[in-house]
Length: 522
Ligand code: ADP
Image: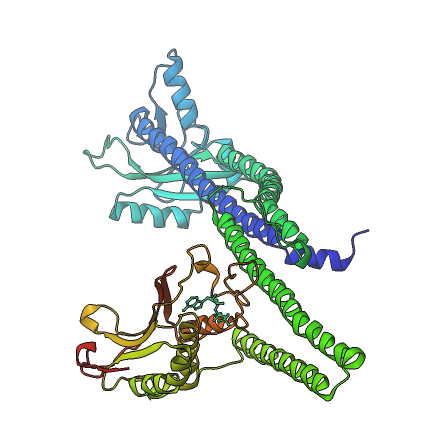
């Protein structure tokens, strides 16, 4: 059973609306076309009857004489034609099928046999009143245009009447000719029958073709929308557990294909971030497990095997160290997840990047000296720029601490600031941290910005000096948040160079002095 709700849902559907629009357009077109056709047909039929009457009028003038035999005789309407000639007989018969001849006062003129010159059909239509005839004769004398009327006979048939005047022969009046009223008619029955037949045809054909057209529209709309339905069904099947599913491409090159491609690309992105999330939680649990196991081990030692205070203290000390690492991981992860979910908003302010880098280089002198590394800088006198002070400090610190960490004794680390002016390209600042350390093998380069990624040491495990593997993830996020770019070049055994490029539009010339004028620190 069809319920009202189903009908409402159907009528709101795209298929229904497409079909309805198509049907409406089709109906208007059909009505318009038949209207114009009807109009043209009516006018052409009308012209035909007019031209038949014009021809009859011309023939009438050739065959009809209004004359009398003697001065005292009344005027008679006499038809001169060869009665043996079937053509002439037919023409005169046609003219006389609907006709009336009167004098200018409206009195019917007799014919050769003394009968009134009027046909029975004209009598059925109704002979014009003398007053009308007089008026018409006066009008026709003033301008010789024919007069057209439509009259209905007693039988209900319409006739087109052409009336006008003809003159008598002017016998016995010294050539003075008097006007006579002549009216010829032709039935409009054939034309109106034709029109009626056509109208009936439209009435029968229009609804039929409308129904057929709408049905066709419904089928076509259904076929056009079928891929949409298929795409929707495919999309409905995609969920978090099967994000690898895609809507099959049709390769039709149409708008729907574009929609499907865009949708699939969106799922690609979703899948990637979903994968990242899964990887993140797997990494986190893995990272947390190591210190927790270590703490458990230390506490077990304290509980079951330690005997002296010294042993207790050592176990406690080790456990505390692991707890430190644990809270470090938790803090770093919290910060990173805040950054990646967009909760960490940049607090940009006016900063002298040169001064900031100089301070950091000073702070890192102590750990550098401890590692036997020479830390130098190549900085301009000043470099005013808009950026987030805390985050950029964190960026430079991370790069510096890595560089010092992974550069052996006797090595060198250098920090430089460069500026690209508008003439050289888009205005930007470049922060370069370079070291002569152990470098990174090419196969590891694409991964060093991944969370928890640490380049393995000589064995499979990460080298002992390595940290959490989160430092460069932060660097990458800070660069991205500042709409910048980070490049890394490295040669194993020779050293590594990180180049951070930050957009800094509108610095104006002289805001950053060239590196040539920069002060070098060691
Ligand atoms: P970590 O906390 O281990 O330093 P990072 O994300 O900062 O983590 O770095 C990821 C890995 O990239 C490091 O473990 C190290 O193997 C490698 N790396 C980073 N910077 C350098 C560098 N300057 N020289 C050599 N290797 C580096």
